[in-house]
Length: 431
Image (cartoon, rainbow, N blue to C red; front, side, top):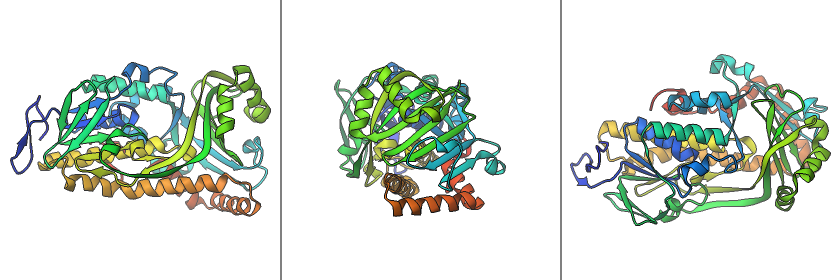
């Protein structure tokens, strides 16, 4: 049963082991903090450990990205008490326009069948009138989560570095750089692609770099975006214009690694000039606001989601290309599924770190994660080429999907995270 102070944790057999916590979470980022809230809702005593001070994670210069939060994921944030604080910063995406071409500008008035248009109204009867998703700047998500973590009284050790992780049949222990030792039935790796917990568990990864980087900038538009998200596929990678509040948009400009690094280092004037030269007519006089960020793009997939008394969530389990904007949604779905498995185990009096319990989580999430990662990888490779036969095949495929209503609506339901065996939190219910 859950801890009371620092009492020992007791499994069904009656064996006791001194524990400091129920769950130790390495990584206080968005996936880790969300899981901590879900674990606390289940009555578990959690601790978050992160090498970055919480205050630094809230700075505008820490993470310049914005996230497409699926409507089912926003239900989860509402159920955890985070959604209300985010609504003022969340921009509805009621339309998504995907266009294929050699040059930008045609997305607003497609000149060929090589486009897809998704409208939230088409599935309004299934999702209660919710949009396809919400665009929210990561800094606002982090701030809302930090506020909720503090309000819930969840222990946070930051800055603190995990040095070693050990596990046996009775418990798992984490040693921090300051010498502190924490012990719990379960340790969660949520520290991102370079997960220390994953490495300590001996879990291998597969993946590769794409030779691309994403240049991210926020712009103020010369006209209202109308809640439309544009994804424009060019031979060197996608260019996305994602709507934000206050007539702003997040630009995600994919280039080769060398070109992206040059754009990141360019002066503000040079970057604005290059942006307008490439996309000026399409952006209608957009002006860049704030800093630019450059993120290398690649795939990194853990071969297992669990090991002895260890579970992985978020980018520690699957770092994917942002082409479909599903990375965080996948990670929060991990958090929801794992929290539900643990909550059910607590109700049954089971050892929450046992192989039997963790296997339920792994079986729930591994196929979905692997299938989505493979799908995104194939999508990137399909659209990052200008070979005529490939272009013809993909343009025909887009035209077919655009004209077949049930298929188009199925894509929207999948993008909204409302398909498959949904955890309770993604249905908007408490864990």
